[in-house]
View (cartoon, rainbow, N blue to C red):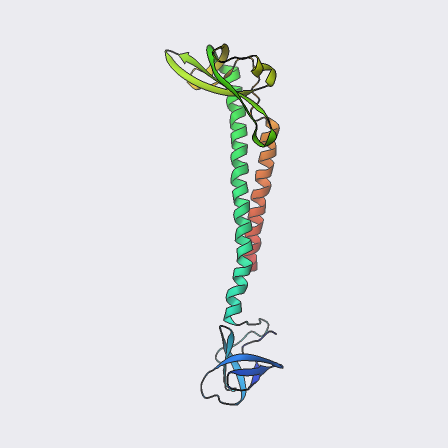
Length: 223
């Protein structure tokens, strides 16, 4: 049952009043002991009633009013899923944008090193296998020297290239003269993030971001 300010009812035992056949807990305002009453306001779990004949404030009859207890619960019930959904979308957006930037950044660095890098002799330090979520990756780490200073590098390689390497063995690498920290194995395809992965991650990042924006706009329009 929807009650509105201005609805008329009949006071019963003093603690309740009948509105449309339903008995509702009331708080009496002024000198009200029996007879007809009108709803003045709402209080938690009850309504505030007073004698008919005067109105506290104009009421828009098109907008139903609910007890304050329900008013406090209804927005919370609606807001919690919204904020949880928005938070999840924003978290996914951050992850996907980070993945896209990492993939494209890795590709850009690899292209610069391969095209403008300087060749150097390096030594394989160690090699290992990584299996995250069932996907096997073959990793290796190497060390080389530039003007007497040691630099470390690592790469993910195809199995054929990785299996032929041994710890302490030689390997040729290319590095950027202006920043030797950026290097790649010479002539060995680095199987790090590729263009397809970067493109897919970028598309997902755009979709998730658009979803978060759409949710926010719809929320603002409902207010």
